[in-house]
Image (cartoon, rainbow, N blue to C red; front, side):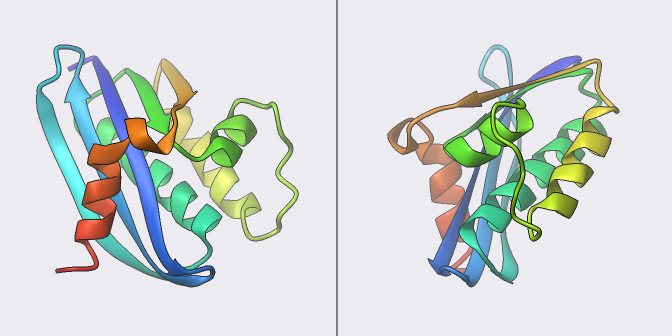
Length: 132
């Protein structure tokens, strides 16, 4: 699988609060090859969004992806990762750096922002982690 698509989302109960991530990774034909639904501890919503992106990059790498399109409803994270916004929050700086290191494992990573309502599968996986 040289090209994969990952949808990521995070959910928080409070900000900061207990957090969880949801990830759906599929092929270009839509076949789901990996899902993640996991509680990740107490953090801010933006930190949780970055953790979801980091986990998606790690999972896609394990699956052998050379190219990845990562779709998220976090406008802040996507704009930071594409260079349109600077990372000003000290709590996000190490997470941003981790993403950039993971990107180097791929030939190409593309980030795309979508509205929350177009990211419902990943959102559902994030919220499912609170019920487990």
